[in-house]
Image (cartoon, rainbow, N blue to C red; front, side):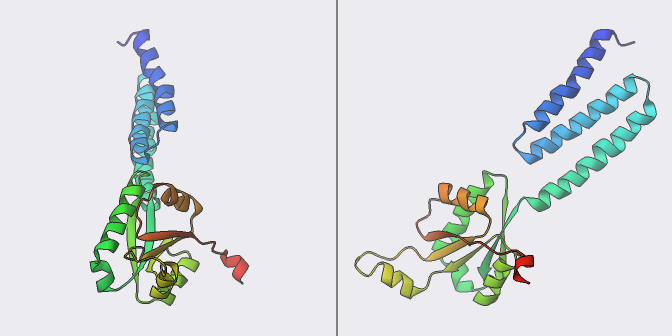
Amino acid sequence: MIDNYTYIIIIALLPLSALMLVFQVNPYHALVIRAILGAISALVYALLGAADVALTEALVGTMLAVTLYVIAVRSSLVMRLGILKESEVEAESYFTELISSLRKVINKYHLRLELVEYPNLPALEAALEEKEVHAVCTKQKKLELLQRNRNTATDVRQTYNTAIRVHRLFEIMQSELAFPETTLTYVTVPNMEEKH
């Protein structure tokens, strides 16, 4: 038989795990804590003699809910970056370094980078306007680069433009992306209702 102090300790774990869940920054850690919270709830119900409620909590509240949360979190924590489908662009070391730098920055925020290739520039721009991607990365035109650097004799290294439509992602990249080979641009995309 379990004494009263053990009941108090087990029941005190409920608000403690709930507080840990609320203040968790990493969504994957939050999922683990949510599973622990469900298991503690099932244990409390079982100790109090409600075996049917404990079983329901264990199956639905813990296993099913956490599984659905994993699917939702995994699908929502993606930054989709539109790029042109060109083998010579992908082979360039500047582009590879840029993608690596972008991955490092967004990994800090528990995001993953998904590269989406488009056959031409109009398709890439349409994808940004139709909100298929969060950002696009394109080569800057040589004319723009020559106008910007016509008085300097140094090598032109700023070769990519990254246009971002999500303001929070733009703020993150602006403050943390230290890669001189790209310029960042915030693009406002009108809603579909405003276009029609």
